[in-house]
Length: 480
Image (tube, rainbow, N blue to C red; front, side, top):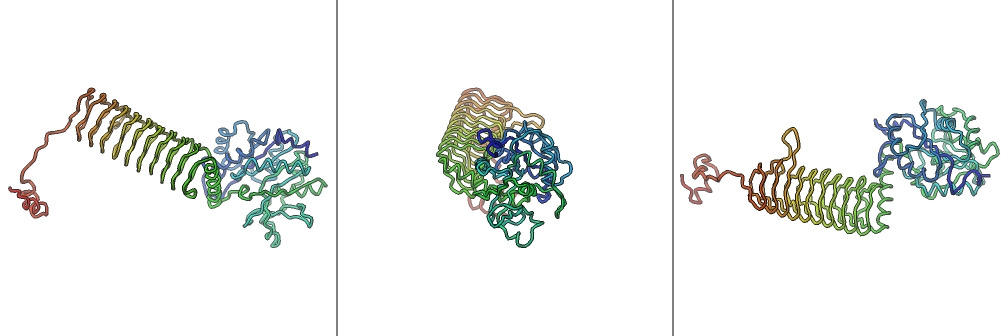
């Protein structure tokens, strides 16, 4: 009985993921399953869906073997990897996976290029398989455009007869819009027996797993086709266009989940959020924003427009406008932008400010401190309540090594100052505008490092004769 084959509480005994394909239509040096959508590889999404319903996992690899296996060792270290050296079809891949295991019971087979598949759909598929007491079940979907997919051929009573691949389909079969999604559940023993009978008598000269359905049905056992409620979940990826289509669907799915959880996304079509990003309720995201990696955003923050954050922790009430940040922390109530570049290792304390056209790298900006505009801060520690004047440069690199600058609390750095590291500006100190500070400035002092101004009278009249500058100067009363 199928109810004995699949224990719904414990799940499927074995899942086989087919990830050996060449992916030639991607026209890429990267394996198809290693291309990314929403912050994870295609196969990572597939494994996220499959792992919760399977007790053991086998993954069939082939093309780009070393790169694929290296990735799988990181995301699925307990999975058994099966090498398909000669790509002789999906039926051959399953034969290899079954030969490498002695497990009995039930087996789920999925393609490694269907990143939109959900665990909930697999659970519903398993439940239907059990209720129908099926030995072989295939998940199907009705597509608006079924081109390229295997068609589900049913008899006059609606029972599945066989699956016909696109290349082997006749004109009438190509009109069928119900397709094979590449997701199956089998009794393992029945699958072993049927897979031994597969032949390569088809247009591609390969062993088709799809033929197992008709072989099992022909042996008098129950084979069923179970239709999915959402065809988008079962879409596969063969080229860059389909990759973009799936990415768009994933974007909409992720954005919808966040909005239903209390996040305001003003323009979901231009907002791209990785599946790994965490966003609290009452965050507002403006158009053109991309959130990647391990980014985590606390409530009441405002992000965007046209902002990209990668692995950034944003505290409550922070505002980031038209800027880019990577591997950084933005404190509560802090503000960034517009047009700022926050590089790795940057920590902005609560209520600090980074204004327009500011670049910060490997630095800490203290609570309430301001770096308002046109400034580069690198390898520095800035205390609380400090103001860094416009066009200040932290000169941290001597051509060989990076050096540290320490600026204390409540410091006032004058505009167009250069702080040549290593250097320390003490608490409460000032620097005069236009200074090049190469020595420490003690607490409470003002550092002045600029030449005395000298005016050369009549210089324009002598050196720029005949220019509009000379004419303006003479009209203002200038003389030689």
